Amino acid sequence: MNIISFEDFLKEENAILIDVRTPKEFLLEKIPNSVNIPVLLDEERVAVGTTYVQRSKESAKKMGIEFISKRLPEIFEQVQELSKKYSKLVFMCARGGMRSSSITSLFGSLGYKVAKLEGGYKAYRDFILNNLPIENEKFKYIVIHGRTGVGKTKILNKMIELGVSVMDLEKMAAHKGSFFGALGEELPQNQKRFDGEVFEFLRTCKTKYIVVESESKRIGNLYVPESVYTSMTNGRHLFIDTSISNRLDILLEDYTKVSPQEIEECIMKVARYVSKEKTNTYLNLLHEGKLKELGELLIVQYYDPLYEVSIDRHEFDLSIKYEDMDKCAKELSEYFFKLENEESDYSANKLI
Image (cartoon, rainbow, N blue to C red):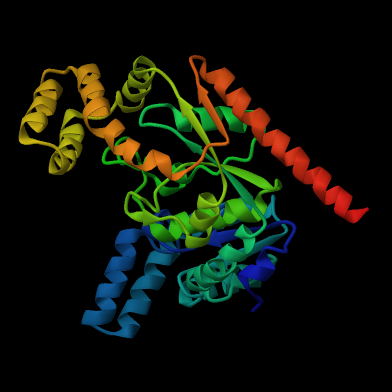
């Protein structure tokens, strides 16, 4: 059987990583750009595990084979389609054990060009933890600061459209970075998946500078990798601002589909840091459907005062108070390209 390390997989020109773990495992700990073709579904894996513990290893194996046999036509069809696009199919599971070994052997015997990922997801995890700091050393950071609701994420998305290298840490973390940060997010947070997304961005980034939104060391329940956070702290810092009216419009747009119950749960988190009277006011406004008034009070009474405590930690290389978001994104992008061009000129002069 052909066994390949993740490092060698990255050197392949036209290979696809096929994760044969359950959909739940894949959702929580996905390797970027891999595809999921599970040999066992979530409930099937539970049943096999229970049988292994309560009965015997042989009984569990038999049950597993029965489950897989039923799904083989579907598995074959999916693998067949991928083989039309990729010259090598690399199968993986949690530790490079039975699941990936069996499916690799099967398709290898059918004449497909296949390999098994050595050590599975565990080995991949070890690899990125060791190599993420090394990849990070290649880059310099431009950090965008701004008060709650100023539209940093929307502006960064516009900068991406203009060709700027933006690492969206909040999207990778599935959290917007505040007590209300989990609202509207579909994916559960997972540190391993987050680390993998950050590593993949760094591995494939072609510029010297990377633009990020200002973050604390923790985003929701996840931690920004230490090397990245240190580079952000030591990077160039820019500040953007806009009117409270614009900020409220942005917040209402972001949270318009969120249920009142979810918003109330977040207000109760804020309640730990404000008076009971203010908390009751927030809850009353929520129950009356006065979201704009609620948003304004939270900005004025909680978020802005909190932000003022940390705003003096940095000296800003550029400050913009905008009315037009597109113009703001363009000005920030011009700043990025100016630095990028200076870096290219510097590198070229060193070679002369």
